[in-house]
Structure formats: C-alpha cells, structure tokens
Length: 122
Picture (cartoon, rainbow, N blue to C red):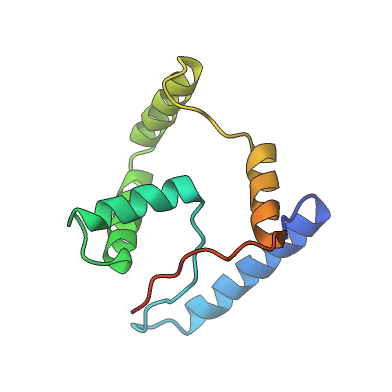
C-alpha cells in the first residue's frame, strides 16, 4: 500500500507512536527491522558487499546510519549534498525520480504476481 493524504498521516502517526513505545523499552537491546530496497539501490547495495567493502548488510546499514547521524550535526553539509544532487539532476548527470513515479513503482511491486524481492539469509 502506498499511503497518501489522510492515510499517510495515519500511517506516519502509527509509526511515530510505535517508535516512542520501542524507545521506552530499548535499553541496550538494539533494533531489528525489515527494509525494502528498490532494485537500483539493491544493486548498489549488493555490489558494495560483493566486492568486500562490507561483510554483511547489517554492517553496511550501521555504517550508513552512523554517517547520516554525523551529517545531522552539520546541516551545512547536508544542504550542500542536497544542492549537489539537485544540480546533478538538472545537468542530466543522474535521473531523478518523482514521488509520483516512485509511489507507482512501489504500488506495482506490492501488487504484481511476480516473485517477491530477494531476501538476505543469515
């Protein structure tokens, strides 16, 4: 399902409440969750692991989250990164994906009869 409008608000509020509940009992237990990567991002993800930069998807996610957390401390760097991404799209060096197109692709993935996404096994 692709939440939009009121449905999106309900979905987002539910997730925010769940995050608050989990935070209240997190302690040092960590967090396990499922993630879906669109095929282009999954290709980059698996290629990065296949050449040995990371040993496991978990290691890669932890590193990416750590870098993102560090970037949050430097809004000027985040703004510069965003500006560079926008300039690349404008210059035709990379193809941007509209929210509408991404939503359509996600809806198609959830509803089509084709096999589901690949799954990393422990």
